[in-house]
Image 1 (cartoon, one colour):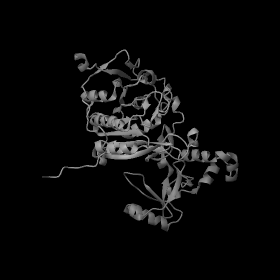
Image 2 (image 1 turned 90 degrees about the vertical axis):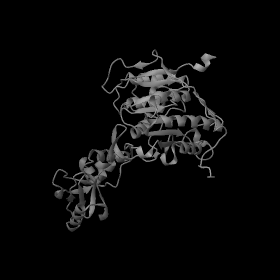
Image 3 (image 1 turned 120 degrees about the horizontal axis):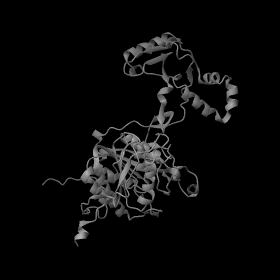
Image 4 (image 1 turned 60 degrees about the horizontal axis):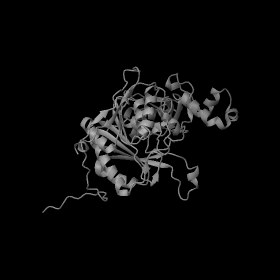
Amino acid sequence: MAAAKQKLELTWIGKEKRPKLEPRILLEDSEKSFHAIHRFSDSDIFDNRLIFGDNLLVLKALEQEFLGKVKCAYIDPPFNTGEAFEHYDDGLEHSIWLDLMAHRIRSIHRLLRDDGTLFVHIDDNELGYLIALCDEIFGRKNRINIITFKQSSASGPKAINPGLVTTANYILFYAKEKSHWSPNRVYQAVPRDDRYASAIVNIDEPYSEWRIVTLREAFSQHHRIDWTAARAKFAERLEAALGKFVLSQRDRIIQLATVREKDINESARQALRVSLETPGVVTRSERSDKEDYFFLNGKQVLFYRNKVKRVGGVETSALAASNIWDDLLSNNVHQEGGVSFPNGKKPEALLERILSFATNPGDLVLDSFAGSGTTGAVAHKLGRKWIMVELGGHCDTHIAPRLKSVIDGMDANGISESVNWQGGGGYRYCRLAPSLISSLR
């Protein structure tokens, strides 16, 4: 007899009990649906869904229309910290919480496209258990990353508590099928890179005649003063002024970097050797598909322009996003959306980064723990279709008013300015149809 197949898994009381969910349909409440009074653009999206109801029953109902169609799901479930918040209780018994999450994550897995992704926002209280649970449902090979999100600084009342100050949450990031997964490139703003300490004075001249000075000299010449006077003039604002100057002069601010011959092609190796033989003269190796190579004194000329990206609607020094997100502090999140949601609202910039990374305009986004409606608000402003599910009364008192403000173009907070949001589109407000089982009794 063959041995039973075994696998590593997380177990808890009641795990094998699967809920028998009655198939229900979703009914639109047209009086609560909302759309803009006119089209703002040809890309306006009207068929979004704001659904009031138990999210497990709603997720089951969504399978009838959206099975395998969701590109990205983001959920911010109760962290199970044992506390009670204004809009929801956060203290379920451990096995009940795991059961709640398992059923919902399985449903989301069925709704995702093969190239879809799931993001689960959680703190360290249930982090380890949730990783094991998601590994079981999605497969460990489809775990892309665990993102550390710095949500606050180590100050305020919490800083006086014994032990380490908690400043971070975590975002579990899974692909439904990693072989089909194809993310976009996103960037994080970073401080000025001070290794770029030189500037080309006559960038418009032939490259062989370029004259190079230090960044300090270029900055001083720009302001028509010497460096000592510049330091005195700008004082504590000097770094900010240097950063602004470098961004404005990105095409001629450079770094001379060591390059290994094995990392470049033969043409570039030849140009590199010539630069060693002709000190002070820039050499070039042309490339048809990428930026040309430039060399000086045996080193590669790197331009600052390649470090400048648009982040949050602003051109800034940036690097490809890492798994530590410490640049999206929730300091002003209480103003976003015009609704108060203590200890629950996430910054719009956080959802913008997630959706920019995992989706494209027109893709479908799902949030089955909608909370204050941040996911839908951001998806709407970014031109994504969205479905949000919420059982609490704040579906009507918080989410609906917030989305109406977005649609009317009255929401100027969050990412509105950076994406030049003007308004438009709409949503359908839906509820679960009454249970046929109860009606037959």
